[in-house]
Length: 147
Image (cartoon, rainbow, N blue to C red; front, side, top):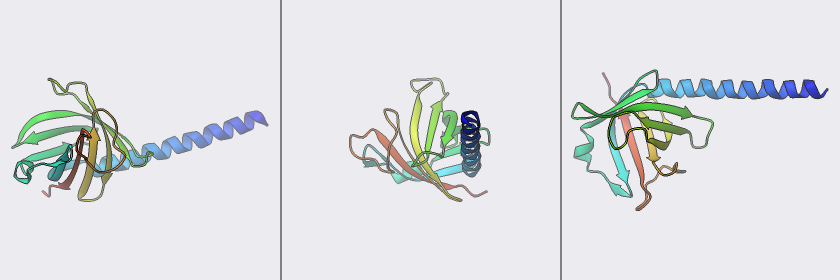
């Protein structure tokens, strides 16, 4: 009886892990494409909207991403999504040589068809989509770039 119960628990745990992995794949698929910043707050201060217009983020189906300013790549890396957390979590690891190489931005996300809410910090993962003064958190909203 004990063995059967343990087997049932193992099967249930595998089913949950598979469902979470399936949701992560769906969310990654929703992120695939090019996005343009529409707003951003860093440490509670709003970023100039004119500068944001020149920034795009492209995410690929294999979880790679790059950030460009005026068409020139200045950051790139990989992402790992965890949709089982509330809010959904994303780890953005930077692979660009330089001061940020190897660092991981701990984020939360919400992605729809054409809107992506993206909030992150390097010290700790935000719990809400907000950036308060002194928080060291960046909160952004991006819109999908139509072809």
